[in-house]
Image 1 (cartoon, each protein chain N blue to C red):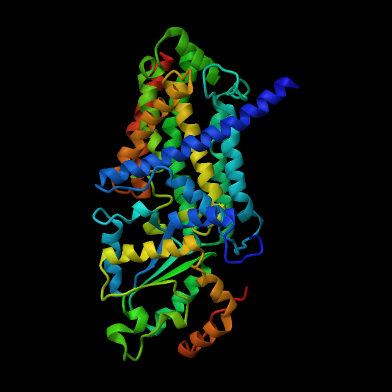
Image 2 (image 1 turned 60 degrees about the vertical axis):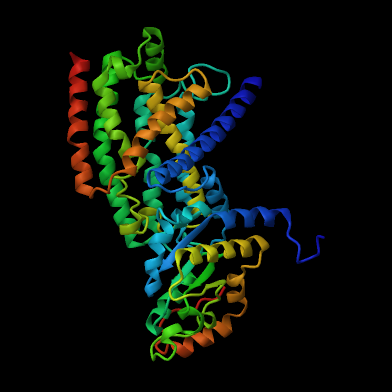
Length: 181
Length: 302
């Protein structure tokens, strides 16, 4: 059991239980899907039942919520924010635009597949997804965390070259420092 | 040696008690605010999970020595203040250093935690923290004046500066000080929401304006330590209010009931009000609370 990498130790179970039930989200609300966040958090759908609450800064946050399309300009900010967050961190791609570009699939200044630039743990389909779908996405993320499979942050570190290459293909004026862990 | 063993055990027990009670109060306040907003709300043990999760987060941020020391400073000051507060009127375990510190010392030591936070936040260099710290210190100037006036009125009226002495006076005369010196109680009560930083006095950590203010660069273990320190300090403040104005408590159940009744007041006020601006907050504290503090001083002196 001790050498089996698939099984979880007791510490992992406690860690994952705490992580699962306490998700501080940072909503990157530049896409149109941001309008679905307030009803998700407030009285009607009440995401705080699941221990989900908003975080004010990337330092405190666990979940980065990309709400909808990303312009190439704002991708740079997303990468900055993602690299400021502390491990373990999760990304939820919100709406069709983060999966395949959605209705902006042939636009000249939006990206199509978010997963090529930062590792996405859960995608929520829909244009736009309703609060029920958002909560279902969060529950799916919780399930992944419990099983120890939400390891996008680890994937980002291990495949840093792949992600950096993709990012620099889009962002031509790269003036940020290159992070390496 | 036996005495020292009891003292250490008592100190550890007191700290654990303050942590657990303060955390549950935080959870209850979240639940109560959720019910007021017609939501279900998180479970009451949610704050424990938050602290545990933050403790398990990795940290790769370095801002210098003061950034590391600030949360430790805060929790040290919270526990130190806790040691000087009489938890129960009498008893074996919870008489830590009750008889060594008086009210003036407590007034002095209670602002030390905020000072540590200000230094640590200044070390991060984030502009939001600088604004938050300046707001916090301004607000402290606001609520400290009626609070100090109320305590000085008590000290003049009963001619003692000892917290245990004031508690003895209450148990001998049989009346609580909220009745025997009402103006001091009103001034202290009106100054109280400023200490707890719920709305409308949450100008320091305003998440929508300042990105949580002084703690905006603190995540993971740092934030976890700060939350622990905050819950211990909430218990400290509530217990001090109960000791001074509500006659103290002879057992833990009475203490929890009294402190919770007192705690509901800033929480419920906060649930139904919007945030003040800095100058509105200071103007509030230098208005009616300071007026009642002045009346209390006159009442005590003549």
